[in-house]
Image (cartoon, rainbow, N blue to C red; front, side):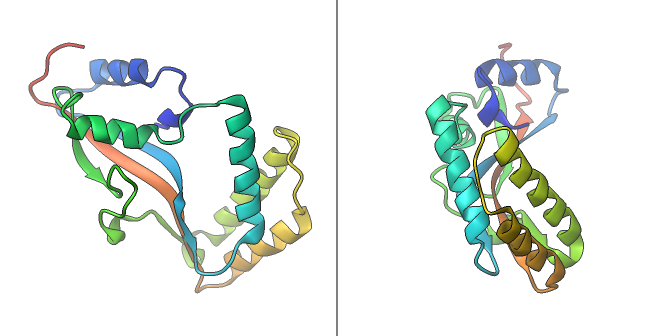
Length: 171
């Protein structure tokens, strides 16, 4: 579930709580660009992401840090009667919890998927958000990653796995 795009994330969490089995799990994945790393420079992808962030700020679309706010409220016991944090890759202030838990993409495993994802992403930037980028250069950058077997990338995602609390009051 990506909460950062939801208008009322509290309602989403209430509904998830209602439908989850006792001790059921809820996976939340949100973007966290400062954790995005790559084995080589990606200036065109970085530029595209910066332009998209700027557009999203203009239209006030969602909260890109909702998963951190949720994690903090669970630690501050606001939501702890309802959910428990089972696993996460980052602390609520954005530091790595455990580097082995990072979501990592390796070219030999998913290079073609990475290339296709980026081609789609670059097309959406142009057609949906009217963001101009150097498509040819961006394609070369993504192709290099997909063809180089030593390439790796940490995706810049924050994930939380929440478990429905075993004893909880109704929401």
